[in-house]
Image (cartoon, rainbow, N blue to C red; front, side):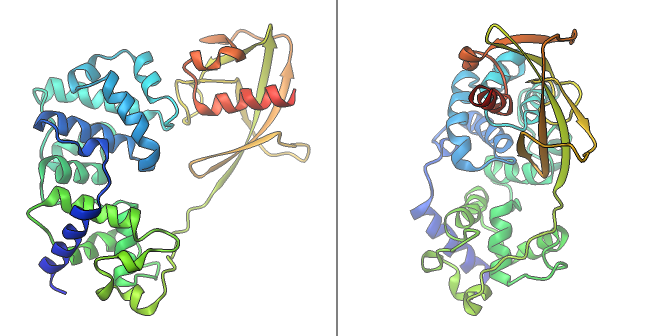
Length: 327
């Protein structure tokens, strides 16, 4: 199949099947670029269906780059609350401030300038250039990677390495509709070439797909080791309120309100009360119930009955809910 024919088939499918996503709305050029910037930050580590309500709320309360650059951190975190990976929100604000100061309020339309902005790596820079500026880039997200692996039947460890996939994506060619084409490839991965049970009967490029010919859709997974870590979580409670502190100690949930915690080595008598998975970390937590609290910097007592009134991460809310159900 010729590359131009491949792109035409993919774009024809996209025009008739694409999802109605809020950052794809008919917007002014400047507003579209802002929406793409925000959505790409949110879509790092988070699925589209999860992002949609947060994106709508965020852009309603912080509607443009200028407002984002000036927003106070409490409002910013409140708008981001529940999405997790809060460093993305902080980087997004820093990026907006640099764009205002260094680029005259215009999001850069070249790769090197974008890569210099906080929170923007190769993928996000490529996505912004393609979708916001119609530049000839194909960002290699998880969806496009999956389509590529199956289309070319890439199975070996050497074949699925990032650097090899970057080379192999040239099989898709290009289109003068670069933004739509990048999104079309992502959309096929999200809606058709799903991780399990791909809907090949609806796929516009199945005839030349090597995995379809072999009827083998199993994907070789990269070996990403999970890390087991162990924590003692200290619970102080008085008058239906729990003591929380600002997290300046751990990289996860940094600068957000958590229970006082300390990381420990696993011991024979470590019987965890609760387990969480954050990224590739298996967090094993053992509760320690204490009466006399020490003085913690940046501490607050929060009323468990008014939990939604506080700016706390989902992690902390789940801890509170567990304690209320099990104390």
